Amino acid sequence: MRGFHLWDLLFLILLGACGTLAHDLNCQRSSTMKVGVGLSKTFNWTAEETETCDSGALCQESIIVIKAGTKTALLGSKGCVYDSMESITFIQHSPPPDLVAISYSNYCEDMLCNNREEIHHFGDLSTYADSIVQSSNRCPTCLALGTCSSAPSLPCVNGSTRCYEGKIKITGGDINATVEIKGCTAMTNCRLMSRFQTVGPMLIKETCSIQPFIKPRFAENGSSLASHFGFGVRATAAIAAAITCPFVLRKYLWSWVSQCLC
Image (cartoon, rainbow, N blue to C red; front, side):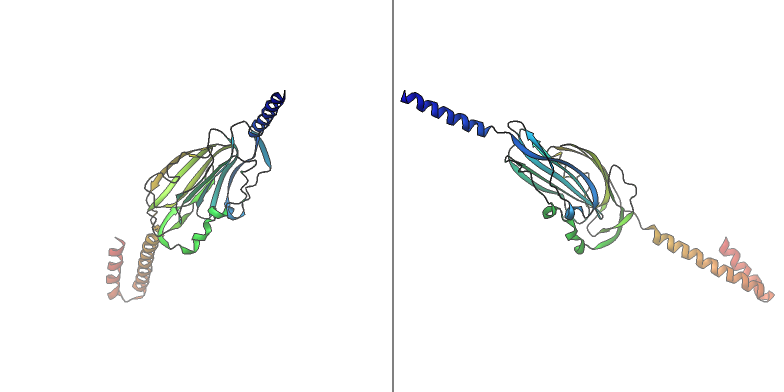
């Protein structure tokens, strides 16, 4: 009888342990799709919503940070993820100072462990602004969800070799968005995301074209306009002089004006 009670006690202990190991996991849940100025400093990633995951799941928090010109795009996801192992991944896909792309992903198995609040530790890209040296080369520059409404031609920095124009389609993790990006780059092909196809549960599809720099036409037009303007002043002065000069000199002035006009 004493042995029976002992096995009963061991069974109950094991049953309780198994129940503890098989507890439901709660994770923060949110989706983020933002474009703006200075977001890497001000963005709060805390999620108000939580979800209960099925057995065998982990919590995840994953985000893509893209910078072009003065704007930053944030596309992030928090929630449950399955068939994965605990890990933390940080990748700088495209380095500053021109177009910049960064991704971060955290898989964890503790209750509400996907609780990162700030991203400025890896997303504060303004620290590079004071060290860049601008060149005379220019590219259309913009960053927007969907399609850019405008893309002003902005100066590139030394080291840039061409202009990038592309779109990144991101789906999964409650995200379904397309980001249009234009700006200066040193890339030779579509590698803004270094050909990564996933960040956490988010799937990535990048399409782009690489173009030569925009030539500063204003200098050429200015020179040409100045040349025409200069000729116009000289021709007008010559005509005025021809009207007021003695007849002996007029034929030489009219001859010069006729040759210039031809």
